[in-house]
Length: 187
Image (cartoon, rainbow, N blue to C red; front, side, top):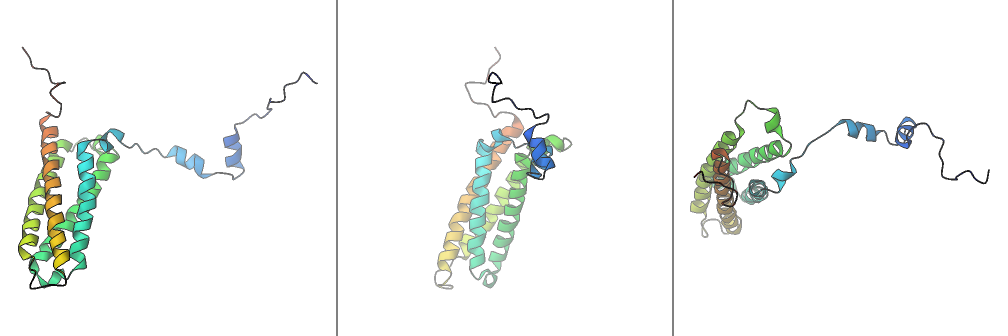
């Protein structure tokens, strides 16, 4: 018996299946059956970074508007509507692209849809920014002047982010997203 190796196991099943049968880790089998594919190349792309900027700064923009008395100036109602609506839609669109919904919904022309969304969002945010900036009055609402001025600044930054996203969406839709080193010109 001295020649018998000490590291030999006589189990006939894997340790994972025994622990799940004994109630050790029953979620492991459930997690293995649910597969969620995240598009990691999208996360590293410029459009994804711009969408994250739109989400974070858009949230900051509408939080600044909401923290002031926006009901006193009717234009701020429009600014609040645009900021919240586009924040929700951008968040939904980001997660749809991240989890690959465009591969499951092939009937939707995704590059055109994203380009139209980004273009319309740029125009709406531009109008909201202009309404916000035009309504900032340091003498009328002195308490909320800082909030409204900061909201106007972040509204301008988010407008620029949506404009840049619209540009990159246009390049994606046009199919000219490559760089000069990879583009070949027919001779």
